[in-house]
Length: 86
Image 1: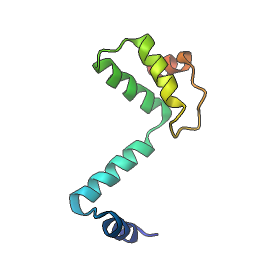
Image 2: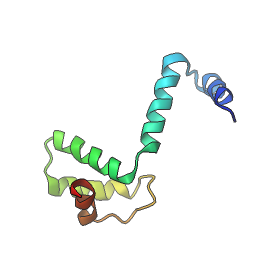
Image 3: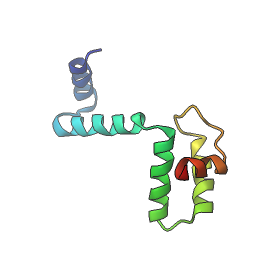
């Protein structure tokens, strides 16, 4: 399906047009275009901003990783720390 066909499909099926369509495509690409490392780092920062501490953050990211789209599903807290801090 070409881009214009896909856009028409979304517009007709979901009533998405104009800026809403552009914003949806940008968010979709940003979400599905990120790597596991980018996700972990961004999530770590977001949870820190909520006042959470690293041990809690690492556990939460490990739990969340079980339902994410990334192929690597067996994240450990150690692996999460390594993704964040190198």
